[in-house]
Image 1 (cartoon, rainbow, N blue to C red):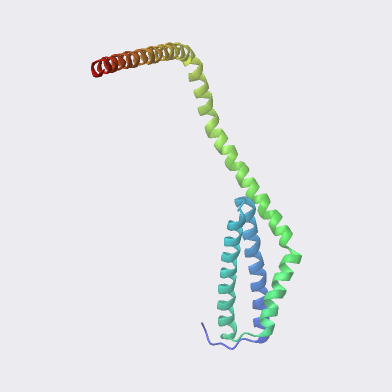
Image 2: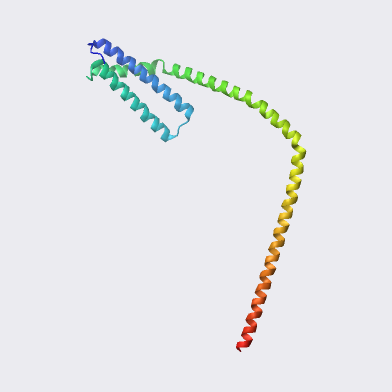
Length: 182
């Protein structure tokens, strides 16, 4: 921080430029929000972060240009700069940013497709070559599935029969024990 006395005109001009800058930062945040597709919580967090940044920037600027003296015309300069930006060039800047970002995303998608399409082509050709193996695999798999189901069915019957035999023996023992008690 230097200790040169600044004129009020200089302080007003700097505060107007700072208002324009804060408006520009708000547009950058709007662009991030547009492409980020934030939900309610994300928007609230983004707004809080923007206001923390703008308050920090504003206080640092006030400390620098007026040595911490908060003057009404400095605050009006912030407001005037923001209004000039938002009612002047904000929509054009935002449209330009969206055009640039959309173009960059389009180029990235094109590059990705150029890299992935040959791989898809090769994989398709490999699938065609391996189709007989796939058919054979499906036939073997279905055969073993049928065998598994059949074995499961047989085991179920065997366990059911064992249960029945076990219960039959148990009943016979009970009958014998009942006869002896009588």
